[in-house]
Image 1: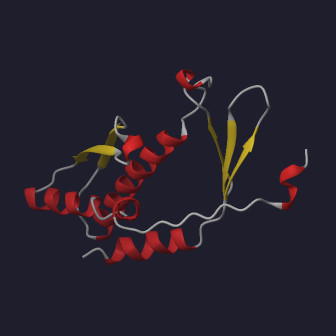
Image 2: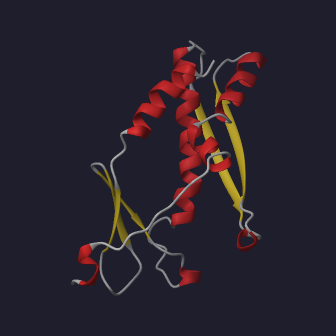
Length: 154
């Protein structure tokens, strides 16, 4: 059922280029984020000493889930000729217990188009199978941080 989405999205993920984050200046927390040929920015909220000039890393985490669900649903609908005309994914989080190891994401999925109940249910199931959702909930993630040779240079 999810063959199309898995094939296309997983092939994109497998060949992803590195994400590079660089300090823009020593005066604030704004950083550039380069992914392939795309440049984004990140900052801290004012409550943490930033200028709130760009999304925070937590915002990008939440956005990764929302965008993956939207793209997965659109791709699946296109491949299955489901008359989906648009999708809106709204993610809110509850970080009250984050320090205890619990981070709750609430997702509101809005499907647009003249769809049957069966099609809506099918797309709802597909949204919950997006690669980022699975990564966040079922994958064992390993992170290894190394210090590069140039770490002590200006």
